[in-house]
Image 1 (cartoon, one colour):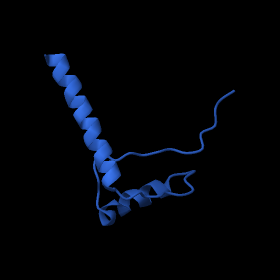
Image 2: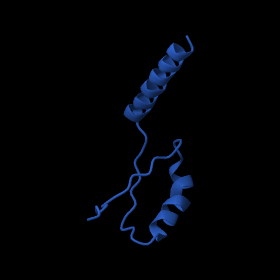
Image 3: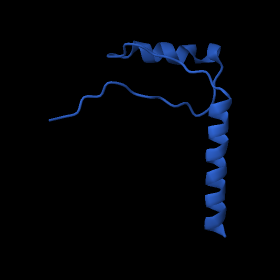
Length: 66
């Protein structure tokens, strides 16, 4: 028996202005089976999480080189 997928999450490689993202949102909406596309505004929490993840990776790479 196969699993049934109810949703997908797309993560962008960088923050994109809301007026620049519209063509991508429209393209995703055109795909068969897509019911809705929602955008989420970047906020200080997401920025802090990204900085912490980068710092953690930087420390691990430094330890590996050392």
